[in-house]
Length: 168
Image 1 (cartoon, helix red, strand yellow):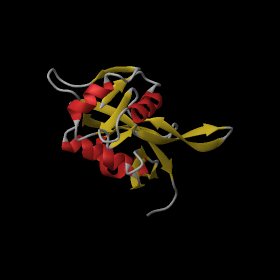
Image 2 (spheres, one colour; image 1 turned 90 degrees about the vertical axis):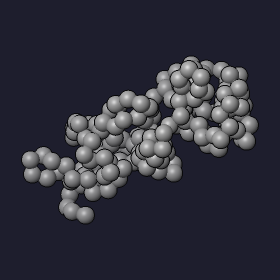
Image 3 (tube, helix red, strand yellow; image 1 turned 120 degrees about the vertical axis):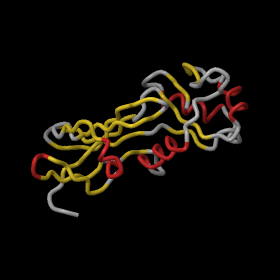
Image 4 (cartoon, one colour; image 1 turned 90 degrees about the horizontal axis):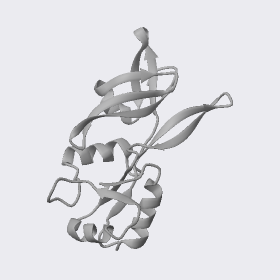
């Protein structure tokens, strides 16, 4: 995982893809989330970066990639502990990124039904596996906040929801 300036994630990923050998990077991506925003009285799907300020890179050659990354401008720093080249995700964190974003690395809007007592029931979408981790529901903004352990610390992530009528 590489830290860059917030708002520069796409530019940094593009620079990495252009300037670093494909032998060293299996995949370079920015996890995103789909969210509903209301414009002119209508709900529209928009994309936002799930982890602002970070670019993810999959590699089997971390030392060599580290050397080439030094030449990429606009990188703030490589995350990691002293003596390490990257902040490597553990298997659980890697699984989380892949599960929540799927192959396209985008957490789509989860479909939910509002039940008695304003409880939500997740019908489909990435939120389905994390309903126990919900710490806040904001139906006005069509989003929920989940708490997960990621990058060695507790973190809150916002995920989009769409309210639907009826059952599964």
